[in-house]
Length: 253
Image (spheres, helix red, strand yellow):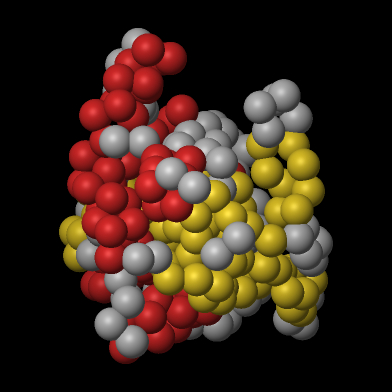
């Protein structure tokens, strides 16, 4: 087995990204799309509605396939908050009226510190009929840019409010062991959940493998090169649709 193939193996899976030098990756992107990657070019997936425990993942055929879990290396992750003055469906696909790309300070209307914003308070969300719910008008999400085996570009897993606590606890447990998230192989599954009014699914993460120091450095080098582009990713309004009646609060990370 050649050194490059050995480097690419993590457990019983082979990661194509581990075999490609950072410069070759940039050259490949330029050959295929004519410029460096734009955040809107990336496929995104999210927890399904209605309590389904299957992810719908885009494929190269243009269709989607249902999978019970997603496994891969987190290339980058970020917290966002987004607020739309109009309900989903009224001006769908419009940019947020206020966006925070760090979960701390919002830009737009109303803007300012998220912690002091009334739209970030639980119970600030109104439904389409104008009835106040128990949810937040400004939804917090966590975006996970995940490299899967046999792929060199990340998919974006949009973590909704109901799953934020699970992800934060997972990342904190790794930190307590001295493991940065990019040095780990993660698995994400869905488990059914229900509150008084809705059935939904929560994302449940787990650790399935740890990269060698050499592999982790390779991932970190590539992440540092494309991170500025990934950080331009802005969550879409449809990504923030979640269980509005849910009152579970999350732990900031």
